[in-house]
Figure 1 (cartoon, helix red, strand yellow):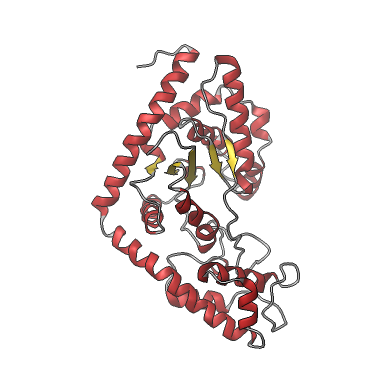
Figure 2: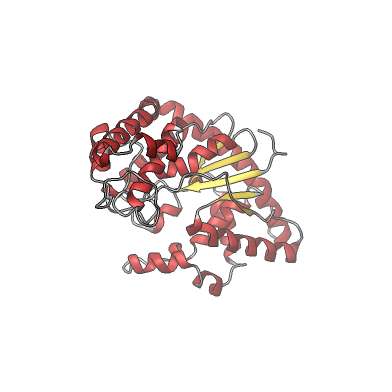
Length: 333
């Protein structure tokens, strides 16, 4: 890996399974970034603890997600793929950064407010300090660019504020990261709520197309996908959001243009269109699922990926943390 390349850090929680929206909107671009950037991909298991997790399910989700990353084309030989909790510097730096972060800043975090409303019986300190741990995740690796969605952009902004504040006191310790805007990826919406982005944390399974969904489930979800009272297969995001979303999925997985698909399905109605889309989706995810299944059965390989990733991440993280300790007067060794 060439450290002279711009450094990109991305973290994803192992608290749900990747869906077609996450793949087409993010992972597909990440695969293409591997040659141009120095990439670190972390499975941020510590972040997932802000909500109560069933231990075995969390472990299974972790390995499923790790295997899916690789099955989708994230190459461990070209990137650092690691488990957040395997690199102790994340939590150590997070504590230090807590002392340079203000309560008022954290009170303004909209994601904390939203999650606090949804989980009124579990408004914990970890949820409140989530942005500080995320700042540590990013700053440990002297990250230049952070690819995030709109819901996480505010967290990158507070990361920048913390880094600048720290640097103003102690000198140029941290690289101040920027939000990374990748080449335009498909924005995939929910199947039942086509005006809202498809999310792996969605509580309605029929709203999400999981990359590991069996063929019959994919077919059922597509056939039940919300459309409209018309029968014309035409892209109109405002008046026909359901069909527009399905057209976007179809075009992206088959590398066809939306106008070409509109022409093909002129006069065919939604039934034929949905049937063909379901078949195309099954053909698209089958190689990913087959590769995933092979990887999940090869636990020694997955553990080796994690060991190598942790070792590489720890080396970089230790360098930054020692600089921080030295700067603030702690004894680094």
